[in-house]
Length: 179
Image (cartoon, rainbow, N blue to C red):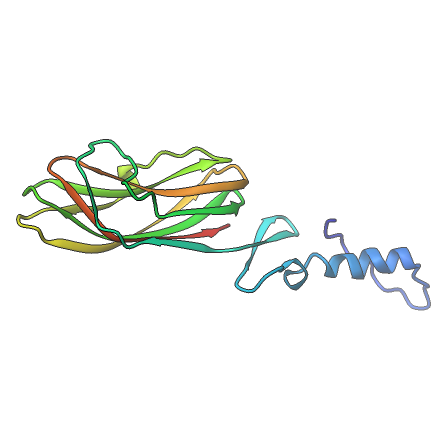
């Protein structure tokens, strides 16, 4: 069903059932309340006079893990990972405590997308921590608007890398707001 331009009322004109249904009932079925199927959903525009309900989702991994990989990869405990039905974009937020055992080395946390779309994790939109020595950790948050996605079921997965030393990651979380 699609939204259509409602009929204009004309004095003493009789509307047929089909005209009423197309102009009133069918258009009301295209509004946000009619599209929502669960609590917590958002209504997003999918085009001119069109919209859809989207469900934000989140995931977290508390496990403390390390990596020495210089290419983006998953840790032993995958994720966090969120599967979401998206349109052509999604707003993502991720956070963690990051550390690195080598002074001057960086630890990175980014997000890759798979499923209907394929987007590699990237330093361009990563959460980064540079070590100043010792075993200090820093908590940080990053946000990125993924655009150009293929509408459908997309999986967002946190991935990790270092440019030296051993990176430590704990209390990792990911929030995805499908648009």
